[in-house]
Length: 201
Length: 99
Image 1 (cartoon, rainbow over the protein chains, first blue to last red):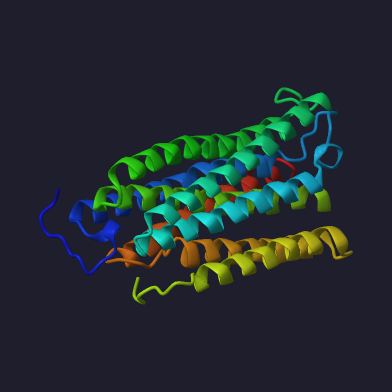
Image 2 (cartoon, each protein chain N blue to C red):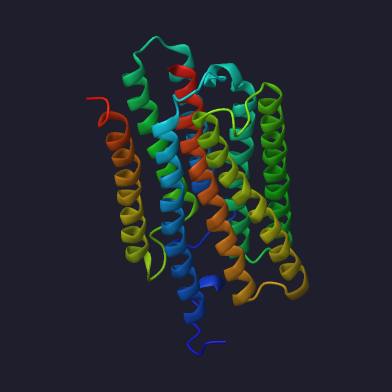
């Protein structure tokens, strides 16, 4: 571990290594913004190319979209509470909030998989039209990130349970927290510029 | 980080309540009003940006730590590039060939 430990800071900022890792993760999130921007760009160009297939209004179910949104929004909130408890050094509460976050995230994923199954049953597959190709790629990339995040957070929880709160485990928890909030930010834009836009126009 | 935390996560709760209001507000404006498509998109687009701001500042503590300024610049640059990519792609690919 790096030498200059500043114990006046929260655990995750105490070592130089931790500060660099957190900075590095913010830069990664900058790259993630670009990744999703390219997918939003593709969707924005192709979203009316139905090729005779189903349109937004044929397949989107607003009630399910609202449930997905609330699940992810609440999970972002509970992730915030987890980090809040981490800074109060409440390991048990931290792990409890992390598990609640993951349950909500899994609920979101369950809804999204059902959504995809529903679309395919309606005859809306990835191959049907340019609109649907770009839709599935955008939603699928976000869903893949959520899936990865769940697996990642489970490993962090295991480390927390085994090693307790140290500068290293605190930093790892803080970074998965940033990742999880970021996924909610992406979802806000999917909610607005895919679902709501599709149901207005 | 600047304020020593007490037992209640006030800023998180406020952020969450605002997120809910913005989400339902956007859905209500998009689905329950008769405004034109353009007006609705401008309103709900602004609401989305506000909500992203809540996540970044109230949940992710973007400005926190000694690299706070770097983080803000990094994310602003990311957002700028995102706008160029999305708006630029749509502009070039959907208006160019039509004329």
